[in-house]
Length: 451
Image (cartoon, rainbow, N blue to C red; front, side, top):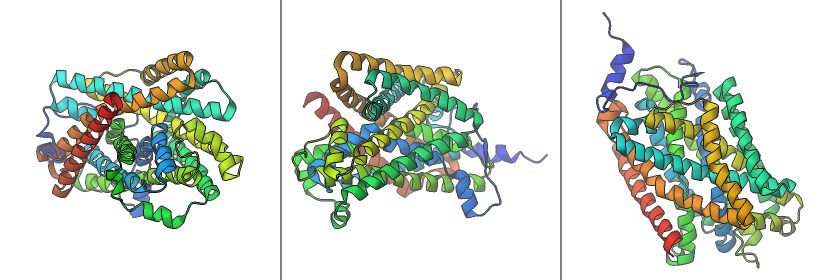
């Protein structure tokens, strides 16, 4: 009897795991998007396009806006090099997530459950749940601030309205995962369009912008500048994105053969790399806009999102500038909450194998973010939301290494990955990046808590 080709190709990569993979990630959409096996390069690339953009929204969420605004306002274009380096790190780590999801057939949460003891798995799960709630908190507050800026809606009502995205995700996912991807890509295009107009209004110095991509020694010699640079770098990689990406790449229906999986890894990596370049454009655009509008003026100290919105229109000479800024903020917050709810489902099912109805799981995730946001707004007003944003970033910094180090370890282990183990150069670079990110986040945490 001929051996089942699926078993034959899966066996080598299963030897390093404690048990064979017993369940698929996001079962309701797993393998739901057909990849034409004999199509040309561009048709295959189009079939794999989408997951990278869901990941990219985590790199342009409202939690990143404050550091980009502060960096541009205070130091002009000098910190563009930091955004660029941060983006390269993100591209590397997301490529490892793709490799794990496709090569090992597991998302990062499932891989942790299969590799670590039950107590360690539970701790990692709880840490990840806290990180997702903290990230969701930043998106909820960002969207609420945008609604307040656009329509004068009280922050409490804006926070509560963000719960409606649970219904949006459920509806779109029931129609097919491509609809979720289309919504996210559409919102990214709106954000990019808003900032393209902002840049046109701001009229930045093109030569100075290009020079900003060249690293400068004063970034490390000036303590205040270094702090903002580390803020940009340390908050770049969102831990939930690593879980999310390793799962949603499996929504594509590729064959369980070495050739098909290798092609899937290649196309999915291209997808995420191109998508993350859109995040580079948007984060860079925020910094460039702030540099052109605020640097060299009396408003160099601006870092608050609300203040930036109020000042943009008079400084850029157009009433549309502030409105475009708020629209982009709203799209950014809404986009990131969509992906955060998916990540919540992935980590619960992956770490502890608990399956809840999708609407219930997403409602729980959203309530964990909404309740503290509402309490803070009621008790402390808009000033309290700023402190809550800072706290959410500190929590994310604490959790990040607990996602990055397992990811790098798994994808560097030939027993677990078989033929899809990361190349040696990628392993060396990934371990270096993991240590750098851990050190920077530790330093940021120390400065935030004790400085």
